Length: 118
Image 1 (cartoon, helix red, strand yellow):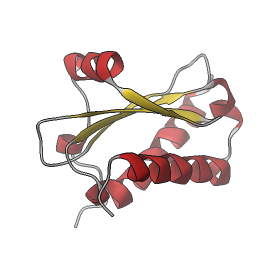
Image 2 (tube, one colour):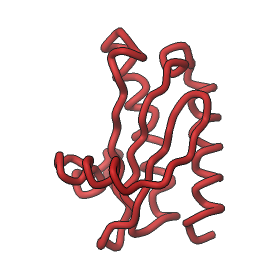
Image 3 (cartoon, one colour):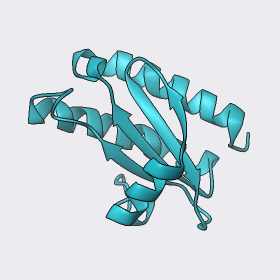
């Protein structure tokens, strides 16, 4: 099994991002905003919107994106048929890996309570 997140599990098209942003439900923490909507697929897809405005250095943005993708890779099988986009907030740039992981777990728990199978 590959340790990467396959392209099929990523929201990459502009129209898909626009659809999620316009029709999504949202879950908010102080670090990230999780937007989600149903898709017509049998699997979950992830998109990332980590802003330079919130995380100025590319090294930090890439670290955050790596952590999010790794978390999603381990938890994607618990949800099917969703497009998920994670959007940064001003506090994202100050979050270390431990805080980021805690925020992701909280978002995933809230999403599970709303949409996902146990």
